[in-house]
Image (cartoon, rainbow over all chains, first blue to last red; front, side, top):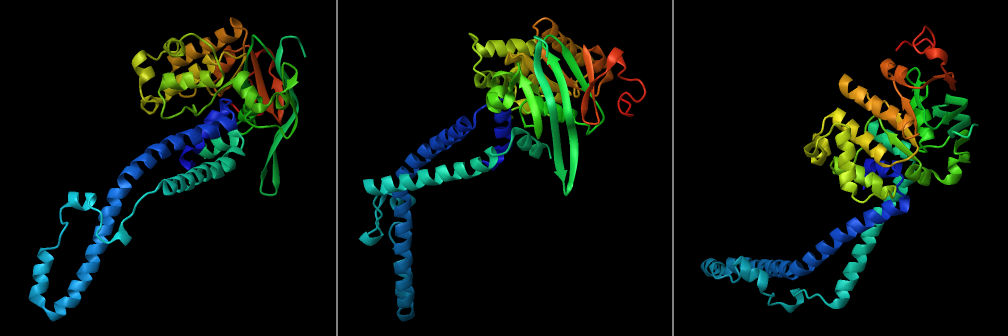
Length: 145
Length: 241
């Protein structure tokens, strides 16, 4: 919004109404939000699988360090045999620990959408209120200055 | 006020604060602008030429006094509506939308003003071509056009709005002599043939001397220069152009 400060001044100078300018900004951010939201829903399960398996691995690795003190050679073998080293497997495979398994329910998706919409509206409205209270001259002069 | 009057300044005052000091730009400026005429506003730097244009264009409001469009106070019309439907402004710094090409800039202004023509793109291209931009230049990224070409896009945008009042701030400031002559002729035609009122702020004596009426801003007042006394000694408040 800050980067578009001058552009808003030009639209105002051409006679575009303030409401239309805000609506245009909301539509633009709404389109970006829609695409980003769908993409994130599709990828979130895969990302969570990777993160969960990494957490599991780090937990088992800590256990192995403790065991290393007891048996150094045995520990080396276990490291080589660590499962899920393949990236594709990590992405597609849910973690064995069910507490780390992230699942998206309809309620979660709706809540996420609501929070994101609020963030979008606030991020547009706050700077818009600041910018649009200025006269077109003040906006254009600031750009030139 | 005559029947031909399109724009009137009535006791217009404008000032700004510089710390505790009040700097007066316009002091009870009064003048009637008529349709079918082209005006040059001249004056020393900082005398209030651009401020007069800004107020006439509804980009800001006077501190006191009224600006009337066809006898109606522009603040009553609504400044946004006035800018959209009644006035075109050519800015010194072009003020084009940087991510649009020349045609899109012109069409965008037409869309905002609800101009109804069968093919807006073709109409925009026609105006741009009349001003000397070819089709390739008209479709090029606006940032890749020269200053003079961008100025012509700004002029095309003003012409495309098809309003009765056109305001220009140094419209030929970035143009070569040949193109400037063409632009001057375009503005004169708009005033004389299409009965529009064109008000131009300029430093160019060649440009100003071609126009119907020359006004100077001196001590906050809009004063008409009689008998083309524009460039005689002290007619500018002591500033030579």
